[in-house]
Length: 72
Image 1 (spheres, rainbow, N blue to C red):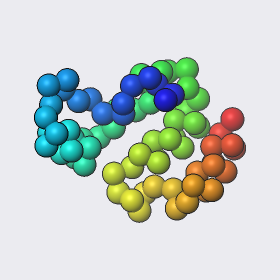
Image 2: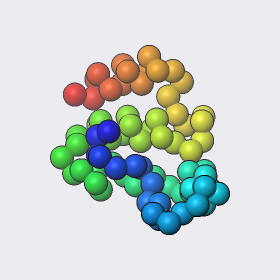
Image 3: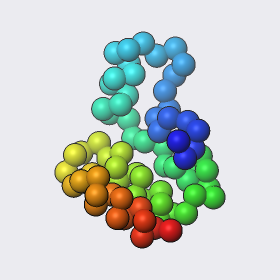
Image 4: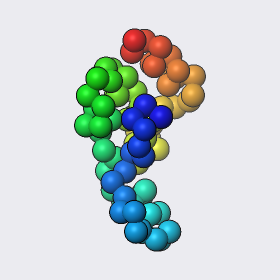
């Protein structure tokens, strides 16, 4: 929602299998590559939420919320 685009570089002709594979394997496009005006602190919070490895994501929605509120 912050960028107006999805976080992956997907081919418009990708089939379902290719799309699912991309979700699991391709790195996300950094938010600030799409919208440089987004503060780095906000981008870090969002990008952590999008981490491929669940161990690298926020432990809870409340933890993410707190970090997002502090990022402004």
